[in-house]
Image 1 (cartoon, rainbow, N blue to C red):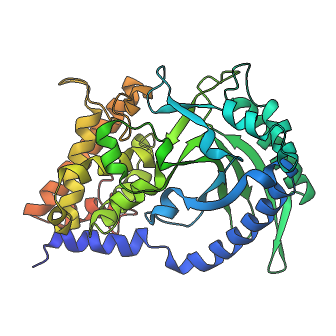
Image 2 (cartoon, rainbow, N blue to C red):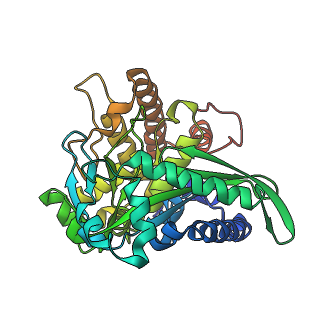
Image 3 (cartoon, rainbow, N blue to C red):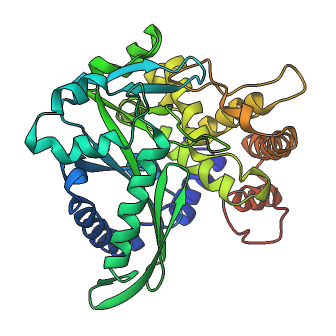
Length: 381
């Protein structure tokens, strides 16, 4: 029999998380923008050879987007001629990253007339050792995107309605912001498509990678930005999608944690990928029946995992990158950021735990305010 706390959690999914009524308008607008910009990208001779389709990524692609469908992540797959000849190595200086040696690719295509545009562009994007450079690749793509937006007149027309657009760089993404009737942003993320045979995963992680055919090398800039940067972030989105698939209440729990984060200023530094990473680790620890548990129980358990990872007092907690455990993803956070998030997560978990035993009106209002506006008076944690 469903407990009262569980009923409140299920209600929160319908009230605050579900955005189906907005999906059609936003996705139609996004589809039109995507198709126009991708067409402009392919009008570049070299990029036309490299662009090999796209995949909807991020929270929307994982089907865990909450609230409004106002942020899209579009992974643009880049595949070089003789792509399987790219020599991939783990970057020993930066866990989770790889380097891409283009020597054999360039040796083969240098005399191939159809691939002349790619070869000429590659010459501008490698160093003296023929290592692909993140900053040179991104600079080229930035020029292509700037020209594309200019050709569109910094606007897009959908269904007879004109919306202004603005382009900016944000990390590895080329971000387009759309204003007007549908206000949203799209991160166009370039990704060098690599085969399963080219992955350099540790033995345990290869098991989790399974039979996924591809993975990506993302040109993610260093912080601070470094010229002549040969390091690319390895991304295993398709393998992650398979690991999270068909796990009953997993995605609802993940959605509620994201919605809870979005209602609290102190937890704004808890990136969606941090939360996703915690779930990836949990999938490897739990059997399939665990995800049949009430969503409220899973949320409380995962709040405990988050607080342990953030804790600075009883041995510094860590959040290890799922695909390379040498990388602590929380290392980039300042201690005060971790402390603020830890305190907020612990308070939320305490509220939910109290609701299991005695769901009074005050506790019910506090649970409600953890996911959105309180229906009555109540303290927002």
